[in-house]
Length: 492
Image (cartoon, rainbow, N blue to C red; front, side, top):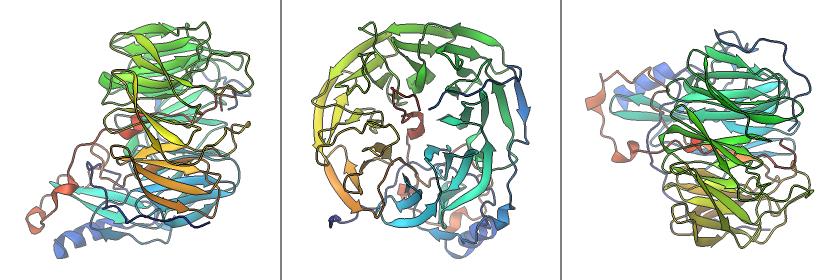
């Protein structure tokens, strides 16, 4: 089968993000940056509970790489004229890293098992939830801030030896330059600066839930930690802790708690089997579903919008419910509305557009675009043929992810990845892989503000460059849109 490839879109030039300047994975950056300036103008519930006390502490010895940073890879960094977004796609037996513009395969990394992909928050690295814990994947694309501009580099992607050990690696949540990891097997939570994701000696805030469970945690900009509550039998609600670890709010009115999203004004929405919990300004509000059983287990939020998009299932007896409605939760009014769709969808079908629009990839092969303010379906974009959700949640199914203004969609039936422009509805690139894609996420390769500072104050060579305005734009934190890729029926 031959898939055509449209004329390649210009390299995407959205906001600069600052990634870690660490000399990581064998890339000697310092000399490159200086030379460039002088001469060239990113379920199972727990099997057992943790016996550790529920407390918060600081630790800096959580990970230990098997090799030094200089020995991690033999790849060399190459300076490029603009940032280079990349995608990662899992398949049975490994991970492929793709150029997000051409969709060409840059690297094929062998890795056994069912592996899951999570943005690390620095727009260079991913955390791979795999056997043994959260392992760092260097996507080989990053930016270095230099005064009023940035320099951009690429290298060969590398699955590093840096791993955060976990019994059952679960959710990874990125917000406001902080990354939270949750170990379902022990109830341990680790939070750290996103720019330190690839640092084996990173300093971390640690919290242990009273009982292990399939959970989630998110830290807000003031140090507030929102964390789920539950045990191996049931998940019941959330606790909210201040920066010192003192409880400031709690609710057990959330049966089957699962997933979270952060909306505008740092409002956190957590899914329940009968609605959602909304946390804002020190208070928790319960928003009920219109049905006695109205499960919202996967959410997509946007800092551009006070409204969170969620899936919606209403049949507690279904072995595999194929929903045709989605939920919209208005965090300003604590109201929940439902939107009817022309087709069903799955847990990997939710995303948010650049302007906060809701995106749902339907089994009719179309991306359905929802105006969250009016709760109306405003467009449907044909992308692929009709498809049917597989019965096992780990089996490949179409997935949608937003990266740098483009919606990327996988079609496992044809081993294809599509690139879609939401405003115009154009499918501007389609490429067939030699593997069957399962999960997918990506990094922009931006210099991320607040993440890297090695050269941010060095203006020595600023006047030696003329830089396109495309290097500096504003962009929202796409990774606050947490689609947790978890099947409601299994909570994996």
